Image (cartoon, rainbow, N blue to C red; front, side, top):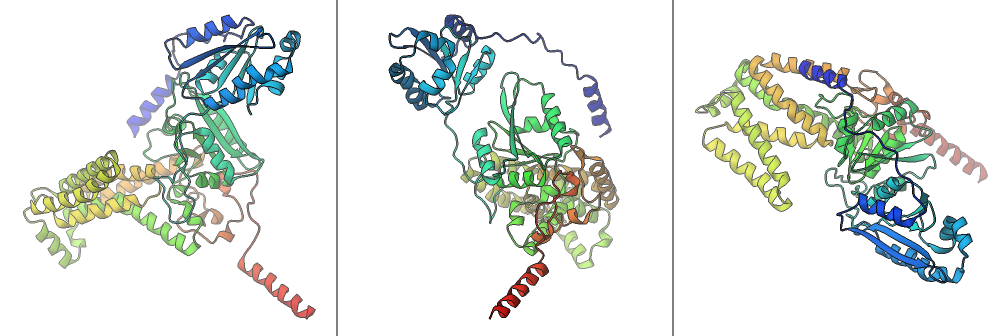
Length: 540
C-alpha cells in the first residue's frame, strides 16, 4: 500500500500532459461547396465506407447539393425517402426563387423539403466530420456557409435482452445494450419526471465517445454533480472503449481492490439509484452503467430485495454478507486451525482431519493454494469458452480434478469441500467487481494465516477495515452508514426494513429533496379503515 501510495503521488506530480501539437482553430464552412467537400475528402481519405452523393435540385436543376455519410452507420431508408426523394422531387413543386433559397436556406429545407425528424445547422467542418462519423448525414449546399446535419443513425444493434450478469427471480427482464440512445430511453421509461435530466458530452480525442449523465435536477447534490463533471472534463485520452475506462480515470483511490462505483446492466437499478439522489453514467458502446457514489452496503443489494417482502429480503441480505465472509476467510481459517490451532478443533473432527491428511505431501497452505489456483483456472476457462462447453468444463472439470487430486493424495477431502463452499459463496455476491475484490484478498488472508495463524487473520481484518474506513467514493465514506450511525440508513444495510420505513432519501447523500414517500405505517392505515367503517355504520 505504501509503495502504491508513493507511485500515486508521483503520477499526480507528473500530471502535465506533453502531447505533441497544439489545438488549432477548426475551419469554418465556406460558401464554395467544392472547397468544403475537398476538405472532407482530405480528412477522410482512404476510407472506402464514406459515401459522397452529389445531386442537383430546383426547377431548372440550378442548385448543387451533396450528401456525405458513412455506409453501415446510417439508415438508408431515411436518406432515400426523407432526404433524396423530398429534395429531388417534392421540392420542385415549391418553385423557390434563387434569392429565397440563399437568404433562408435552412428554413426552406426544414419546413418545405426534408421530412426527417431531427436536423440541425452547423458552421464548423470538424464538428461536421464528427457528426458524419457518428452516423449522421451532412448536407452541403452550394453558396451557403452552413451545413445541415440530418439525424440518420441506423446501424445494426443488439436487441434488448435479459442482463446476463444480474439475473433475478422477480423483476424486470430488460438489460442495457451497446447503443447509448436505447439505454437512455430504457431509463426514461422508468422515470417520467420532467426534472429527470440527461446531459451528454464526448470524451476521447480520437474515439469521441458519447457519455451521458443521468440525474434528477431537484434531488441530486449539486456539489456532487459539479465534482463528477469536473473529473470527466479533465480526462484527456485518445479513446474510451468501455465504461471501465471512465471508472478507472475518475475514481479517487486507484490502488484499492474495492470498486468505488457500482456498475450494472439493469435499467431498473439505475432508475432506483437516480431516485435516491445518485448519478448514473452511460457510455456508448457499453451495456454497463456506472452509479455514483457507492458504498460497501450497496454492493450487496439486489433489485429484487425491494420487490419481495422485507423478511425474505432481510434473510437474503444476511446470507450474502455471510457468504462474503466465507469467501474471504474460508481457506485461511482451515489453514490457521490445521497448522497452528488444532486444539481449538473438536477432538473427533481433529482426528478425522489428521487421518484424511495422512500421506498428503504438502502443508495446509500449499494444499489450499493449489486448489484455489486450480479452481480460478477452471472459472476463467469456463468464462472464455462457449456457454455449453463452459458449463461442462466448470462442473465436470471441477468434479474430476477434485476427485483425482484426492485419490492421488495431493489434497485432503476436507480441503476440496472448503474450496467448493468458498467458491459458491463468492458467487452469492451480487456485484461482480466486489466478488473479485474478495477473491483477490482471499489469497492475502491465506498467506497471513500460513505465517501467523489466527493472529494473521485478525491482522488482515484490521488492515482491511482501516483501508475501508479511509476509503471514500466521491466524498462519501465507503463504510457509510456504519461509520456515521443513522437509523434511517441502517434500515437498508444488512437487513431490509419494511418499505413504509423508507420515508426519506439516504441522509448520507445530502440530497435537495429529502422526502420520497408519504407516511404509510400500518397503524395509520388501520385507523383510516376504522374511521371508514364508523362512517358506514352511521350512514346505515
